[in-house]
Image 1 (cartoon, rainbow, N blue to C red):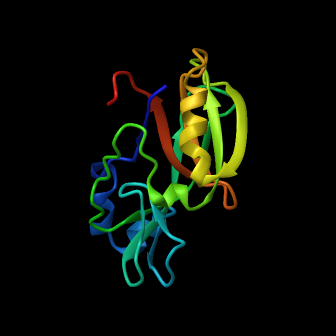
Image 2 (image 1 turned 135 degrees about the horizontal axis):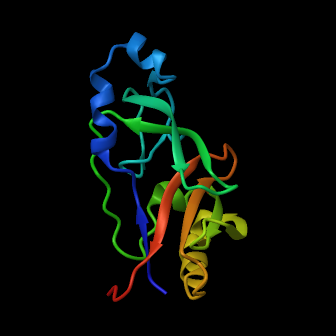
Length: 159
């Protein structure tokens, strides 16, 4: 079954780069300069930020639904991040190159059959999972730090 990885929208975060460090700190956000690559995966561009780039480290509620699995975690957003638009069934390198935790959810936002696997196996695992009608969507997390990477949805008619 075909799937689509959904990056976070740049428009939700770019205004934060205009805030002062004090204003960001009041919201629990840190402005950082990237000092190593890879290691700072942007959730908008779905790419690792490069050394010297400015990023924001902030808490993001990636599962806001009324469920026992309601969750948030730290994410990075690159300044002026280009909006990623992965093609159906495409797994960006920032995901394919890491150890990944896949979390599948039903329409009631209850987790079904989570797994940890090399990023190189994510595409096949997603395609197989979306064959099951009870899987409504998936979340990809970077397994070691546990942070949210992207949401995945079923798509039909992909080429």
